[in-house]
Length: 487
Image (cartoon, rainbow, N blue to C red; front, side):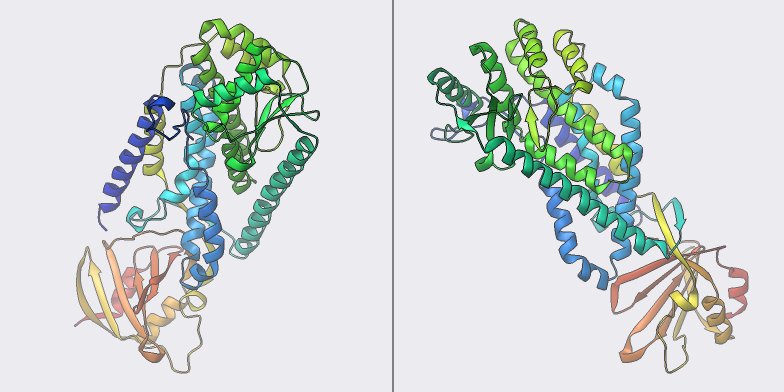
């Protein structure tokens, strides 16, 4: 691979960073600009939120196949690398939060909180493989299966709890809901849906005695309901409320709330991830406030702030709600009444993703300390192992060798202390290296590639099945060279 990994990472980072920058700088389209007979939505989602959940669902389905093909360690390494990078990124974002809220537009902040989660997807290509990890963290081998099961149980439990809570809340607020039929409110709702480029047949407007603040609920277009409490609102207040919810619906912020819950469940053991997802949910509301203020101008700031005070309360489920929780109400009011300069837009989010792409994968895990006998030659054989081919390399210059003492070489390899390396790396040739092939049954050749502090093993007729091991203490080349004679 040589330096191709750097080229592909630079290319992907520049491409995706440019797309993110363009998406945040572009102005929302006018619904009237759509072709005749079609409706063009004014607001679009920040991301395709279903991509990451679908990816993990596919992994769960294909996991037995991946395990048989020897890709289990690569997948484990990818998960660990992303978890670690997310923890570092979220910690840095939380430290910089006062500056972000001072200078960066809320829409860009939403991107900044959400985009690192897509590192799961960008690290799957073999073109992105690094030469080798910079840092290898050893963990007890026997603990690894237990830790994986605990993580999976926590992920399923947290996500299941959030989904069940959402469904219970939805059933509670909609069981006694009534469709709004008052002519003035119905006409206003139709006009605003036209303004947002939304079909009039979608998104019923209902009232419910079980809510205290206006909200929208539903993950799919056919299930979305805009719910009002049984309160009297002026025409201007109702216009602000409905416009706020239409912005959320157009951007699919309900689905974004589910995505945030999914990401929290993936990193349920990390308090920084929970804090980051809460901040991301807050920025969704702040960015919606910003969209409303862009429409109303300065004249609408005080009425909108009073409306926030009237509807203050806590949210539940995957809902978007005009109300502000107690923890964020003060900041939302300050943002509405006394806006600060927040001129930094998409370039920061694009730059952040560019550096995330370049910096991922440099740290990995090594687990399961064991001997070469246990890890390199685990299958019992009726016949003694025999080395068929042997090649010695110095800085990519190599020659074929013969052994002076085969038993001594096998004894040395069998007694090495090794740790299995997670993650997918290229491990390019260079420096000191030794290749040896060991024939097995049915003409299957088992190849060992020995480097300064690594041993890689794979089947020659199945090169995708490869496992790398860290050699504790490194390889004793001085001793190995006493067993080799150039041919």
